[in-house]
Length: 637
Image 1 (cartoon, rainbow, N blue to C red):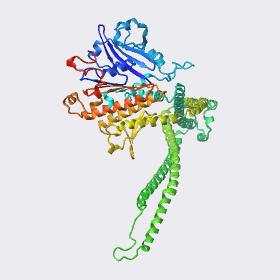
Image 2: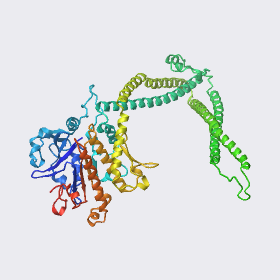
Image 3: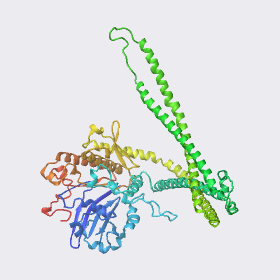
Image 4: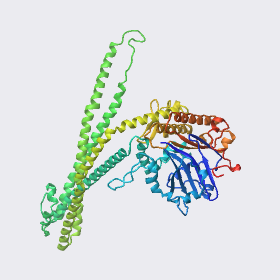
């Protein structure tokens, strides 16, 4: 989408500073601390950045209003923002936004222009959601018809594809600006396909609704798994407490055989008469349970030994297979004796036969026995887990009954304990019913699954996968063409062959055998070439796709720092000036070629750097004389 910065204006009470830009390529050269990097920060600030990131110092201390005059599609617009902490219409809360005529220039106004047009100040939220969004065709209305807030795209997810600042331009961890900001990344990835014009808002809304449903179903599934585990544990506790109660009442009831419905029946529980039998032999019951626990413990130990034995057998098979695999290679031998020249082929037949037999046995071991053992392993593991649960339940019962023996000192205390047990059982029942009620989401699940199915059918008609693949191919192809003109280590990473992933907003180099993401690649020079190529390849795709709404604007901050880490390196000529010149000539050639072929749009690029050249190829795009502090030249004159 056509997005052209025509001018930047800085306003004070008594003066203004205005920088005019070319419609395509712009160089700004200057010394350190002359305000070069601030240009990108000012543009981002006017586009409603959350914070004021213009560096502290002269610019922040002296400037009252920051502004940009831009062309957006077919419209000329001025966007301005007061100083962040300004008393009136503070930049923290308000943004000035006004459409102007074609002949407008910031050079023809002063600070009074903003005072006279105070009605054009909007809150930052209104600017983002109601005003600027009007100029982006695919942006939606503010709310759904049902009044619920929707997932909405925002222009604040566009700067990663517009700015390559100092810390990013050669970064090996992050390809795009702001892609290291946690939740911010989710929004950028969510909006990217809309920005590229692969989908309109209707499809955007369906895709996001689909993702919401998938997340909700996953939450329900996780909740079900959690509640099912809790219910299982509560039933173990419930049976254990019934055991305790019936033991004290001297009633021989097989609790483990009772149906769950019986255990949960309050009426059955209330009908249990709580009369403590003086003859109740809790100690005897403890002894019986301990004996059963010991037997159960031996069962568990036997299963552990059996399980360990199966694991060892599988391990031995793997070891045997490893040894036998040495026979799989084709051995070569001489068909005649090297000494007497006699035929030896028949003598080796017995070894070939033996080898064949061994390999057949290997195949049998590797497939048949191992599969049987895996099945047996799973069977024994399941049984072991079940018997462990029974053992734990028995041990808990023994523990609780032993406590009862100590606590029961009189008949009154015994009766009190019975009522406590009955209360505990009621609490168990209540908890189980609560968990089971939370599992009853069948209607909700059905509705969500039905909605998901309808969305899938509608999205299949769009064939988003095909659109995404076409975009990935073109962006990768254009990026590769650019990379071929820049320094890149072909020996380590192969000939330039960049691929782009729309869904993950990521790129990688496809080598001869391996793929290399940016973080896999060494040297700052390679990183710089990677960044520039992908960025320019993406923007070529943007201007060739009429549906794309990403601004065709690029800001690069000091890309030559790879070759001139310090300004003194450039002044002394100790850096690689030839490589910097070649890099800039490649950028100029690429953008000029793109713009020549584009009828409706074009890429605008602003590059700030220490680098400077007196040659015509450079000076024709130089916006202002080189900024030097001793000449009082800089962002603020």
